[in-house]
Length: 631
Image (cartoon, rainbow, N blue to C red):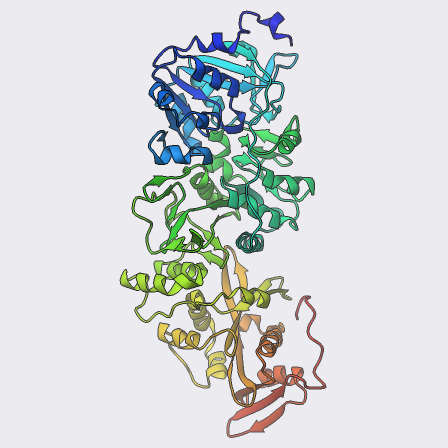
């Protein structure tokens, strides 16, 4: 469509269009990389513009002017999310931050809670039917333009055309300004480092094939996406598309085939990235753009089965409260989409959320896992909404956990040098038992090499890993699930109570080298159940004393043999030459497990008991079990 032929009275210069804005007007500007730069600069250059109140979600071009006092006397900036380029201005009180959920911003416009006189947007040239595309900025732009009394659009042929609810007819635009210019780019700024790699490794552990994922604002969530490159048939339902998704799209890791809502489509509100990303999105029917009140609506999000939300935080306190928009009293970013997606993922069938963050800030000087949020820090996400927290030191599962359990989970993934202090602070606040042992102050990342998964003959998959302090409740529940006979065989007497003190005593001896406790877990809905535990403790003559117990409904599946094999591997790493075990004479199944692996084990009998001496280099020992179903 030729605009000069169809509606010549609407086609004007930027200067003339801007001149229609009255003093004291409330002006909405399209978001981030989709903002109309030429219109913005023309407005700022017009000295008749006085006392103008500007509303924008993410601002780029205006950051060029916020150091100019004359500009600040003429324009007042109201920002829903503080971009990197605006942080200094926010810290100096030169802009005004509006904290709100992204899903609710459109309603603020439609209801006139925030009244708008003018909207400045950017669109692609119209097609033959007169429809322009909002391109990479649909988010709150549609609500802003539909709520404003006057609509001015910059027509830019370089703006990518996008599919979905992104179209507007030229009949609905008051003034059209044709101006070609490069679209604002926001190239990836993350860097590859060990912290990011380890966080990415943990995120990959909990994201299953065929999940639908959301990636929040921030560098870290996008940086960890590269570690999902071995997944299959992922789907996307997210607020913003960034370059972090591009390799997964090109490798067809993201196919959207298994989505329960809008299968085959990437659902998003805006796109911020490089020209390469814009070229990929341009006129690509895979991408389905909708406004934020749809994409971020928790009830819509929940229609995606297996929805996993991945976002970041500035701080997490020991009870699970999350701050994501301020550093103390200093506003840093925004509430954005985090709460919307955390709540939506919680309602999703099979869904959950991840909050990922480095364990420290300021070059390791301060912990991001804190006893309480910094003074002035806002609670963006309540402790009831948080599910999983990940740092480079591991995974903390918080949903449904008590304050005591949360403290132990989070202290365990804090930086080692802050763990004792966190435990002491928790004791002072009466969050945990006064005699609670702190997690190890060593970097236990080497324990990742001791984790394994095995398919069981009952169709379940078991995860085997070392015991952690945060496993206390799971260990307790495991003990009380055992039959009296099983307990007697393990402890040699009819043990009735498995108290906090008992668990503390056992864990106190675990140093993951000379002494080890190793557990097996199976998934039961959204939590894991402990089904087996094996331990070795330092003995004499380069031997470790070994013992284990398996829950009755999992006995006879080869789990004891597998644990014995894994404990031997770990014991070898720590210079042991063999095991010693004491068991009851009538415990034939246990004796069989030992003799099966160590045929030449020396058996020493005494009244009621049997002692076995086993050498790792037993010449008749069978080969290590292959990683296949154990029966």
